[in-house]
Image 1 (cartoon, helix red, strand yellow):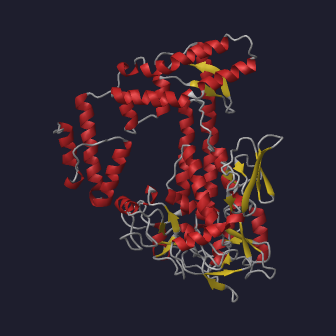
Image 2 (cartoon, rainbow, N blue to C red):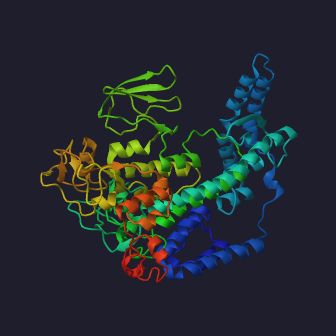
Image 3 (cartoon, rainbow, N blue to C red):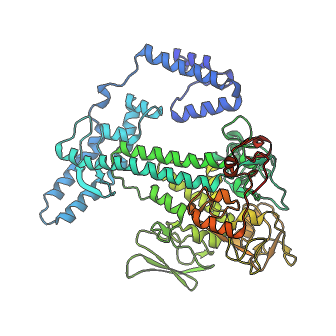
Length: 627
């Protein structure tokens, strides 16, 4: 059937012939995909095409008079189907004289809280069927969210106060119907929460952004290709992950050789070919002394080709997180503290704890302290559970649910519950490389649940800066570093050579030993477990250098606030926090500062010819000598 109309003809006229379709879906996702294709195929015409489409939209709105109306706010049958039974249940609770005030409040909350998501989903489905103008506004991405539409035509049900506690006063009317005085009063608490979130969270997200920038500001493109390694290095990812678009293959996949720039089509081809994991270049898998990365690790980002030498990847990646968190805080003002049943690790406080890794981390679940079999899961007398692995008993508090069962075999560092892993324990057990990969997933999940979804390839840059420290354990020290010094892992690993008595053997034969060279995303000093060995063999790595003893350093999780505290450049260290202690240490050690480096701080302090050779060398300095 021919569906051609004037609107379709106008859109066709604005697009190149190969991008025209029988019909268009101009919701937020559809428009994003269309413009991605334009940027990929017609980068030079991107601006003109976007302008033409904007003109089509503008003219259509003015000539057709498209608008919202009061009819879009009429009483909702979907709402009544849910709220009718809910009102009857609430009446029974209120009229039950046998309930104490506390039990009555709990019963009200238990009745309404599970209905929130169902009400939102049913209203949205109804709006789609009606072709409701407010629904069209939402899916276009122009303004609003599902929760806004629910407040407008459904009901907020319950709100939370400024401390996050649910207020047991039902809100059963929509804004279109009008709230009664009690509902309005209850909603005031939510409004107060939204206002506090805006003021408090905006400042906190800015503070978080500064800490992330400190940790990642040296991640600058400094070279064309990564340094050569004896075995394959790169980050294993799923071909189903669309965030790999723009990354570069480090290992051939299907018909596509190493060095291929990944597109959506190529990822689909690889997935159809049956490969469930590919290896891509990543900042998390490159080791350079000063934090610089290659163009291949940076990949294609906001330009039409690969990132160029001199492009700073770390700072915008960090800002992409803090800015989205600020926007999420602003969104809290608009949802007015509406209570939600979702049990998720989310919120700025959780993100701060992931970055700072404090001793008190209520969302953290226990990690297995040893390799072994789960022998028992028992209720603890104080609440929660004891999970026994081998001879070690681990405590999980009552908010955590086990993800293992009796008889499961686990390795040291594996999560035993659905809680977040404590970053300190994760790095201690898994080593820097594998800890980075796992932390990347958890960090991304928390950001997504917090309303600040962040592109995986931006997170790779942030995680590679956050988890990049080791503590010197060699009694004789390493270079200028003495025992217990906290040093950049990249600095220690750059130029590291396997010890003379290291063995070259198959991954299976290396189980129980420590890696003496990087392989895949695994870093020097990683203990080779059965899972590690299987992963290496899966990607065709036939042999690795390993040693029965760890190297002269061990992985260390540095708090986010100390991002530049251990920086080898004394001027860079002064750009962070706790500057008095870092200055005293650097003064005692006779530390130097190099303006010709990947840190912009000493070059900015020099005050002359800043970034003069940035596009040639990836360093900011003006050719001044170090101090």
